[in-house]
Image (tube, rainbow, N blue to C red):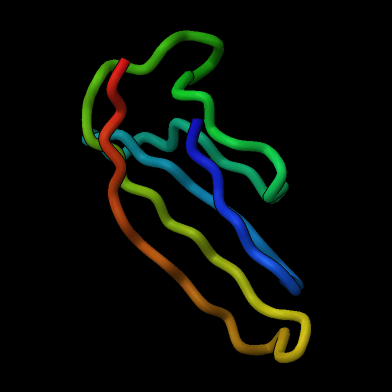
Length: 74
């Protein structure tokens, strides 16, 4: 499972893309981790890109982003 930890968040969204650029996961609930599936089927072992958009309660107008990759292994 892949999840994000964060505190004092005002807004949060995560997108996970496969190599073809298809969104295989999207959520705005930080308590819901990605389980390595897409539409109920296991994703293949590969590298996936994540994009996290967020802002903090103390400065909600400042929108931040984090981009990275994860390697899915079974």
